[in-house]
Length: 145
Image (cartoon, rainbow, N blue to C red; front, side):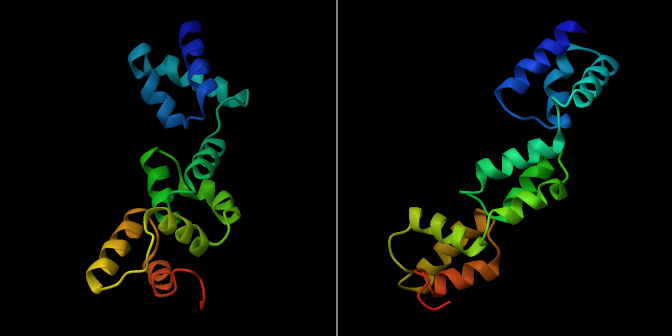
């Protein structure tokens, strides 16, 4: 059990993990009961927090992804996306973040329907909503929102 705790703390020292992620990482190194005890102990001590893990993930990836993608990624990590709602609200304007992502990838506005579709697919894959994509591709430089 001490070795299991040390392993969990070593993992948490590198980055924030959700309870579900840490449980998966420790699964090969102990019984379910021992793992649950260690995780409960870490939560009690404040070393393990799903809310903190969700916030850290959102802050680290907000520059590259839209809110939809961030919520989906949180779900896949075993976190409730509502844990990060406050962090998502602090990110600011989704359109501005989409504009920054678009500007890194594309240097010019879409010249034809094929290029428009390509740019829209890129932004959609990054988790930006259709409404945001339409606004952005209609006025990429933000001249007339």
